Image (cartoon, rainbow, N blue to C red):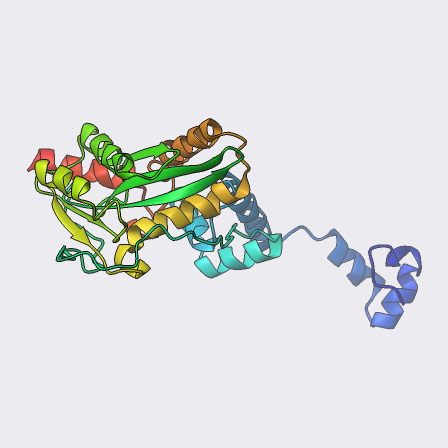
Length: 289
């Protein structure tokens, strides 16, 4: 006996009802019955889940989808969202790229670790982290240096070029200062990459009132916030496209940071708010004080 969608054409209704020990009237009542309220609600949820998933460029898992539904005023438990996403075969992109190490192996003196893996801050601009990553293009690597605020998780400064020499990371910090989101005396934390521990960069930090901080060699958890951003950038964008030129990569990364990551992406570490929302809330509290 076949049980596919064409089975009803192979056997009569009367034959099937007799084999299943149900009445013909019961079968027709079941077939003509309208969807239950639960089924209708789940159909509506599926539409909203698909919209949230598409709006995120297929990057949101069930937790962020659940948070987005709540922001829309839609009540649904996270496990229900997870179940419906599984039924709809919606899977967030999570590639795992290899990482080229840009960190030196040798120890570099007595620069302290002022962060100690605490990537929180009471207000914006007082504790920052930075790092460098690389973006593949057909023209060669494009290097990206970032400055991230520990309070808001916002990328407040960044710079890109075809090299990762010290002027690149200095430019990223200058851009953060130019945006007006750095407090005098702020901590700047990084890994022990040769540029971040260089004499030239140390002079820049001292001359601009930064407190210098570095993690331990080869311990990614000591700069986890910066690593987390690079993971999101590559999982959600870079590893899903091909960049023929550095300029195309540069434009795409700017769009990701400015239009998505800082202003629209829901961050679990921020209670599923955006960095822009957290910064605005702190500004309101500061003005009200």
